[in-house]
Length: 251
Image (cartoon, rainbow, N blue to C red):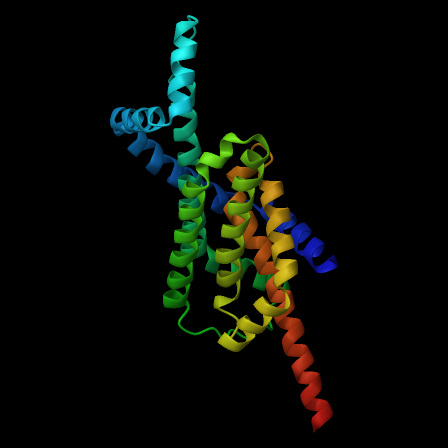
């Protein structure tokens, strides 16, 4: 637990560094510009498709007739834009996380190395191909889970729990891999992910909860990367230190 809190606090400290603030804003606004532009261009066909899809649900069709019969506005005036926002949000976050994991992580690791882990040897091999494979599988599961469970969001408790769970899952899968990809060997990465699985989930929950605060989601991907990098590089240093001490005892 102390390791999780330490990683979280050090991520918060580093996030305030000017270079990390700039690095955090670029991927988020880049992703927002990309998907916002596509949404603006294809708004009419997307909204029409969603309205027809929702009308296929008998109880929503009944609700629509009831509201219009009472002289009230159709639910489509607020439900369709809300549904589009619920789909747009994960696309923006996923794109920003992918940009951070694929492009910004080396800069983040260099920033942390200069402060705390200069002596930590980099033993990672084939980072790019391994990272792409891990990212694609995590993203596919996230998007599928998000879309499949979307109807359950109409149930009040699940509307809060499900998006939080999927975002924590995505943070865990992508950041925990990329944070070690350059420094750890395949065996070291496997050992750390196995031995620290519970605490990594705890860190993912803390980070996702913190980044759910208004305005904090602007820096969410980079803050997540900082937190996981701090935690796992510290764990890697501890693993290598324990092995070195064991070898000394044997000799």
